[in-house]
Image (cartoon, rainbow, N blue to C red; front, side, top):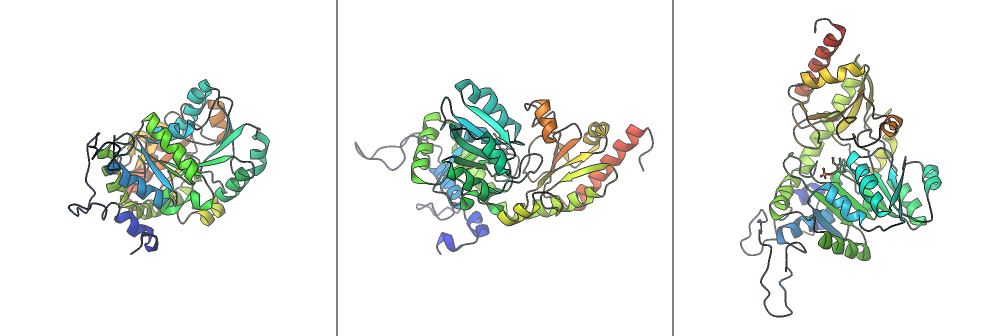
Length: 394
Ligand SMILES: Cc1ncc(COP(=O)(O)O)c(C=O)c1O
C-alpha cells in the first residue's frame, strides 16, 4: 500500500518497519558505524561517513520529512542544535522577526549568540500582520514562529503569516514542537521549514534529547544538508533509534495528552485559587478559532496563573504525582515555573509585558489517569492555600 494512502497513525506505527532488506527486522537496527567501506574508487554505498549520512538516522529523517509533508529531514543532537543549524542560513546584517512569547533558549540563542555575528531580531505577536509590517526591514530574512507559543499558548495563523512573508521574500520557520505533525503540519500551510525539539512529544518519554528539521524545496533542502553536515550537530544512531521508537506511539499519546490537558484546564477554570487558564482548546481563548482551523487537535501543555504568587512555592513542594521539572511532552506529568526556569533568560520587562510573570505555572500533562492528576493538583493547591493563610488544609 502506498505510504501516502495510509493514515498518519499507521505511518507512525510503521516507521522503519519495511526498510531493512537483509533480515526483515521490524524495528530498523542501530548501525553504530561511523565509516563505510567503498566498493571501488569513485563508488559509494550511499554511506561514507556518519556525520554526512548514517543508516539509522536516515530512516528517521525520511520519516520526519514525510510526516511533515516536506522534502527532506535532518536529525540533530537537540532542538537547539536544529535551531542553530537553521540560523546559520543567515549572515551579518540580516534581520529576523520572531514570535514575542517563545521558548527562552531560542531567545537566548538569538540575542547572545546570533547577536555576536551581527544578526538582529524583532519580537512581535506574529499573528498581527500590522505588527509584522511595522518591524519589517529591507534586510529581514526570516520569520520565526512558535504556535502555539511556549508557555502562553498564543496562536499564529500560519497560512496568513506565510502568505505575508512570501510576498516580501521572507523565509518562514515554524517551531512545531508543541503540536507535532500528528495535529499540525505547517508546511502544508505554507511554511518553508519546520523545526522540532524532538526531546518533547516526538520522543515522548523524557529519555532522548533530539531535534528535527524538515525543509520544503530542493534548494533549501540542499542548503540545510550542507549546513547539517558542515556544523555536525547530528543525532547519533542510538538516539535516532530511540526517537523512532517513541514516534511509533505518538498518535496514541497525543490523544491522551490532549484529552487529559483539556479536562484539567476546564477544572482549573472554576478553581477558586486560579486566576486565569491559557489553553487554546478552550472556546474563550483568543487563539481558539485559528487553532481549530489549522490544527486537528490540541497539545498537552497549558499554563495557568494562580491568584497569589505566594501559592507557587508551596504548590510545587506539595505536588506528588506531578513532578516539578522543566521539560514537556513526556508521558510523565511535569510542572514548570517559567519565570525562573525555561524563560529565565528573557529579560523581566519582556516577560512581564508578555505575561510570563511570577504567578504563571506551566503544566505538561502526561498520560496518567486524569482523576489522579486532578486529585494531586487539588491537594497541592489546597495545602498551599492553607499554608499562606496560616490555616488547616481541608
Ligand atoms: C518550543 C521549543 N523549541 C525548542 C526547544 C529546544 O529544544 P531542546 O531542549 O531539545 O534543545 C524547546 C525546549 O524546551 C522548546 O520548548
